[in-house]
Amino acid sequence: MSLRNFLEQMEAKNEVFHIKDEVSTNFEISYIMKKFDNNGPILMFEKVEGSETKIVANVCGARKRICEALGVEQEKFYQRLLEAWRSPKKPKVVEDGAVKEVIEEPDLLRIPVLTHFEKDAGAYITSAVVHAKSLDGTIENVSIHRLQILDEKHLAIRLVPRHLYKLWRMAKEAEVDLDIAVSIGVHPAVMLAASSPLPLGVNEFDIANTLLNDSLRLIKCKYVDAYAPADAELVLEGRISASKEVPEGPFVDITGTYDVERKQPVVEVVNVMHRGDYIYQALLPSGAEHKLLMGIPFETAIYEAVSKVVPKVYAVNLSIGGSGWLHAIISIEKQLDGDGKNALLAAFAAHPSLKHAVVVDSDINVFDISEVEWAIATRFQACEDLLIIENVRGSTLDSSANQETGLTSKMGIDATKPLTKPKEKFERAKIPVSKRMEELTRKLLGE
Ligand code: MN
Image: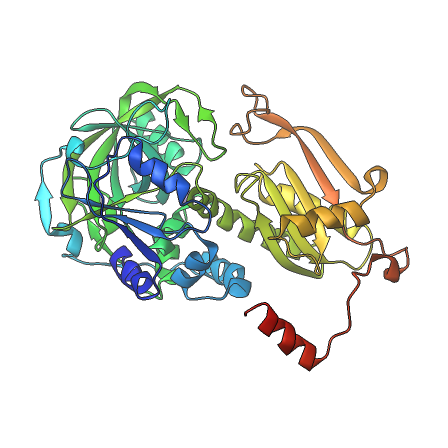
């Protein structure tokens, strides 16, 4: 399964909107992407100014498309992802693949990379899946990183102190550059696996392969010791420098505010492979797709952690308004009144960047913010049900957190019905209805 296969599938469901007017990679495409954000269709830009290459955007921009990519209903999604996390399966390595149709000298300026926002430092690749190995070959990692175009052969890579950063530090101590394969235009399952919170040592390609029912195929790069999906649209072979760093940023991150300029390592690109008619995949920073891809794996982690402290978790929403990252709404079944607060503590432990969390009963739809607000309005007492945790590690993406120490305050709201008060007081009023009236109103509403 490739991105191409998935696009064909979505085309058949009328989920792809083709834009035939000529548009520029400089702000014009990102502007259109923003206009179609939040549950919008996949966008195919057919005519890109100064380029023969088409651009696809918003591939994972809707929750239902991400579920369709894995072939599961939304209710079963977390279970499916959890099962894959627990059962990695090595993909087969093959000699040939569609991505090898063209192999050429690198010229990054020929790739239609977008410049997204007004004060961004420049053009950025935002959908790049990066594979690397530790020098001794025992640890492999796949993760998504933003890459700033510096010139024909060089990129700056943002390495948040996580797994790829660790592999790079290990190589740096040995004074060698770290080989990487940068894959652009891959199946959504590969993107989801690459953004999953797995322990160091788990190769996320193995998780993607499980999600794809053992159909992922990898190729070994020609010049570097790294791997890429054989059916990717575009692969850059490169090395992260052990010694060369440059200013990277400012750049808009998930909250829609500018992430600051920092010194980050340089990637030297040594070879490029792509399909003959490759499609470049764009991803709008702070768009719904960015939030869903980063958020859904953490919703799954919260689902798992909270499931251990309460009898049942119904749904988790890292809401779009909370940037898909800082706010969680969790619907649970509780047995005792203290369960709500334990659920909040478990959620904060499962997702260290989480800042505000609300737990609600199962009759509240966590994806409907008005219903969540209603639960807070009618079921929550601040002096009893509010949890505040001071000076804990949060996300530096939150502009209000201490930007140097990363410390923040967290707030949990237990908006579940108190078991000590009469049930009827919290009941949502219903109007009795007959089959005939149901049919009549459907007709009146034109459904
Ligand atoms: Mn990892």
